[in-house]
Length: 285
Image (cartoon, rainbow, N blue to C red):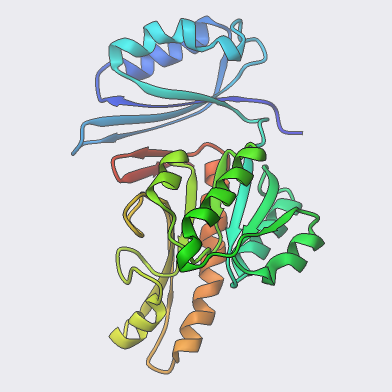
């Protein structure tokens, strides 16, 4: 079994002494640092860090971490949070008709690669009901029409709240979420877009790529913001195409990329490896 660890993620203005202060605090209270990764963004002057430590002999209960750590964090203007490796976040999956990303996520979850709980799957189409049943995950059909979008989204929100969802994955969910929905889960909605953003935003990127005659197509997983396909990017990948490929070939090649790119992003989010600053991310290995 993997040893339980505590994970401290932080960002602050880049100043001298940040690393020493954090390491000293953990050492003084009996913690043992297992991994430490850091990044300084020169342009923005922001320092970001992920510290994973063994809390077995830590003399502060982790749920009381904030009180003694605040005097350390305040002088550096730190924004921080503490996570625990044994916590399994609760992930909801939203999907439309294309099920390749959904199937991949469910398989990786069943095999233990994604250490989270999946309390529910929601869709605006009935097509994925059988897949959800196979994996014994509750499936909820919420049809979305132009005239009932607000009603449908309220139904989705109610399900998410009922199941105490920590974060949401849009596994080719082909509906645009409202600003209200995005604000309810800031930095906690992960989307897969079937192009190498910022190229070819919108609903038919493979058709745009085919028309443009590109030699590479890609997939992008990103956090959702109010601006369509413009949120902080977590992961991307590409595959080569040629003049011999039809639109259908591009779609097929792209689907293989989409599920891999999405699963990586989801796993890194679950493992608390992603820090967002501005419209960028740092993904710590």
